Image 1: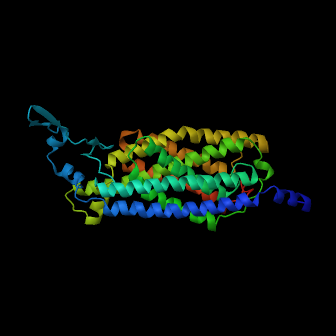
Image 2: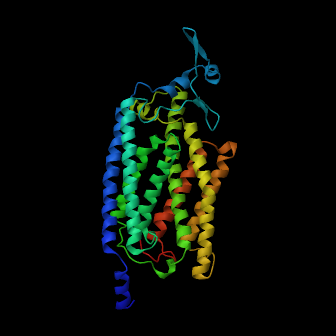
Image 3: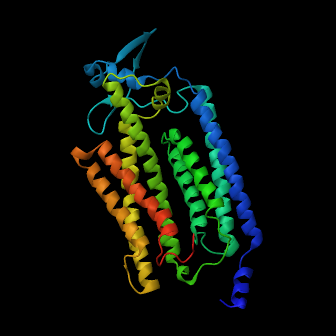
Length: 365
């Protein structure tokens, strides 16, 4: 590159907006930290007196669990029907247990801390989103030219998916602590190990396919991440329920924590649904990448490391979805496949870019 060309690239970068973006990202990290402590407070101070639903369900008479009675209370001339506790059938058909009361434990004080945590999460999300937009504006392009930009966008979208589920009245606040913890780790890696100064794109990335292919890849990764978190929690909750069903007695900490989560069947169903919903979009992501490769390099597929691991990830999730739909592979076996598939996505995200050289290594990290 000539000195004149380098000067033109430097001039094309708005340093003020680039510095503003960095400030906003650090500010978002600070607010995420406050949200992290608020979520912890919700778990700690939420009532422990309203848990024990799983144990009660697993120790009750089987006939009572399958057909709970409806009692009638009379108050004056009014009859009031008391609804039985709603239970959900486990994926493997082994047991029926109710969902836990959530991180707040059904307590008003715990619920207040949870609402504060969500409010701080919304604020941090907006600040981080502004940081991503400022990064894009500093060079007048999509903010996906290197791993640093991919990381800050990915964490923003992951939090956006979580908040969207809350906005749709989905009871997923129990996920908040785990989500924010990993988002802080992701941003910590981004601003230290992966940080790259704002700069122009290399010629290979100058294509409208950048907006299509990379944006869908980020969205898919964010949803896959939500599914992976739920799958991990499912494995813990399923082990807990199995121990109770076998007559075991888990520790107080495990009981206090795991009793508040949804039933293992609910977690299993939720992770399956989110992974199944985004799988077609991941398929489109691979197809879009192949079309872009045809335009940029003159061939649609060349078994480049990034292409190969994207395909391996697709195969792994296809195996999981097929296994999940097969009676003999529901539950824990399918959950392990889901985590292997997400591990493939993580290696495609981090490992290929950092440790493997290929045609996708044009922007360093």
